[in-house]
Length: 221
Image (cartoon, rainbow, N blue to C red):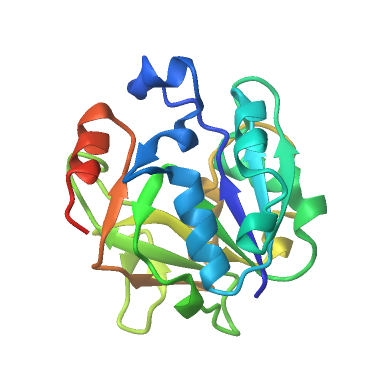
């Protein structure tokens, strides 16, 4: 895989007043913006084509990242209307840029040391998700359960979707343009038992509030 999409259309209302001036993905962690951390890690893992969606203050993201040459990648942009299209709608809107090959998808508002070079899509799988253990402060009920064979289900969901996944583009081709989350579509795929996953226990933060932004900036790396 050489293509990855970074979902960066979120405004970050819980991070006001910082996000009155910049989109959430441009909040800084250890001297670099959240989205820049992802670009660097994806480039290091061998990805050469990056697609970045944007809505709120999208021009700030374009000016910050440019065409990606300084990291040895090619960045294309998928603009969205005011308010954004959420995760599902954002991917569908970007399909013409993504192409026909499997691609990695990363939420811009997480901070992690996950090694993207190890991310694989099993032959029988339509999508492969990286999961983390449930954290009641983020997701009390969880998103998915995981069998010993690595198959995801909706039963007794003890894991939360981390915002990192590999997708086959065909699962989105019959989806409408619009504003919606990707999670309901993924739940439907579990019924076919063609959704796989892995649990990541390393460094991972959802940087969606002032408290969590302060916490991750205090980490000794």
